[in-house]
Image (cartoon, rainbow, N blue to C red; front, side, top):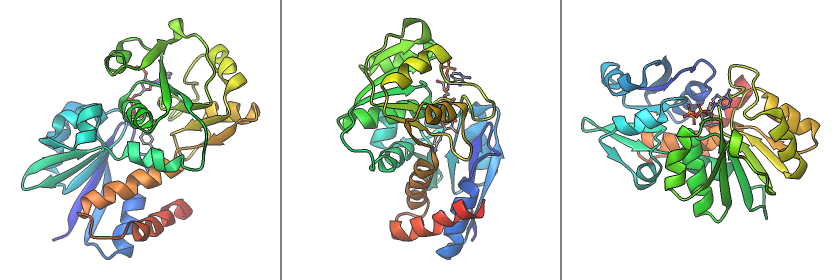
Length: 265
Ligand code: NDP
């Protein structure tokens, strides 16, 4: 029977995941279809998942922490970071994974010998990225607009700042994990702070994809090395696909099939 998958988010219309997964299902002759679902109330995720009779799902902004709560079983990393972007149904139970973190790590393999990272934002994706980067030897600090969301990061032992308490040290890499710039033209941090950061940073990464955000535009103007979220998207998608199809395909084959989605639009 044909399996149905979906991505939940708000907004979700920008998501390239349906195209990526459908390209891979087609190329690998896997009988499934992937769609998108605009979900405003994240607390209804589990109910909607069952109502739509999904085999699996991805979860994007701002529901990754709700997705964590919606699962019956969690893998070790998702449990550690409290953020889930991939759900698979098995025997009526929801299994939660986080493929953002490994996807991001894979996407920055090209950058060698950089150690000090400042992450902008303290949402679900920031949590996953900050933990995996620290586990892999990077020094990571977090800067977020609101103080409230920094509490779990403080509990995890990270040095954190809100806009009011920020003090500058030298960072090699700045990563924007906020949704500022996704569906508006706002900057993730005030311009005066950004100017200080650009003074020292070598690389600026925005995990938003499919558009040049104001953050990346300014970084380019400041002659920084820049990167958007397309490679992260691809690599987290490959991992999610492996979970959806229970590792029956070679990851290079999935990669080649999903890559087509980036040519199509
Ligand atoms: P969350 O909703 O969990 O977190 C959003 C964060 O952004 C919060 O820290 C919030 O700060 C901050 N924020 C939102 N708007 C602004 C603003 N105008 N100015 C400053 N800070 C702001 O989102 P996610 O972690 O799920 O996703 C974040 C982004 O990452 C999204 O744009 C998403 O599309 C992208 N993403 C890309 C992926 C890829 O594969 N390339 C994968 C995963 C995510 P506050 O606490 O103050 O509200």
